[in-house]
Length: 97
Image (cartoon, rainbow, N blue to C red; front, side, top):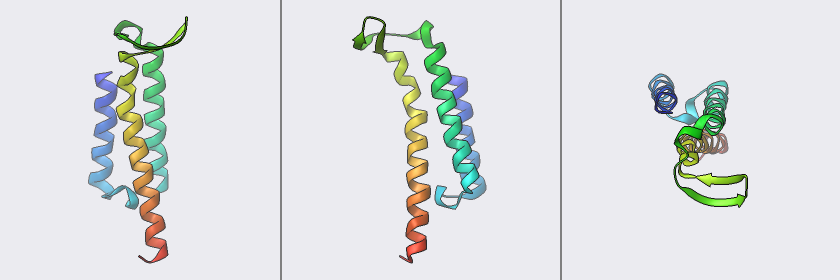
């Protein structure tokens, strides 16, 4: 997981270095960044059996939320912030404020 997170956050650093604030990123870059976050989260939830950790919430006998599942949250939260920042900033720029 640490390799996936490193690649993800290095992509964030490179995009910020290249384009500046997320509202200045091309729409394709925002979409690619969000897609990468979802792929990382999906892959992590699929392969995290070795580091499941403590049981946090059990929904059903075969479905639960563990500490290992929460390792995908930083990528998803960062992607959500990028989307909000990118599109809220663009909407504000278009309204003339």
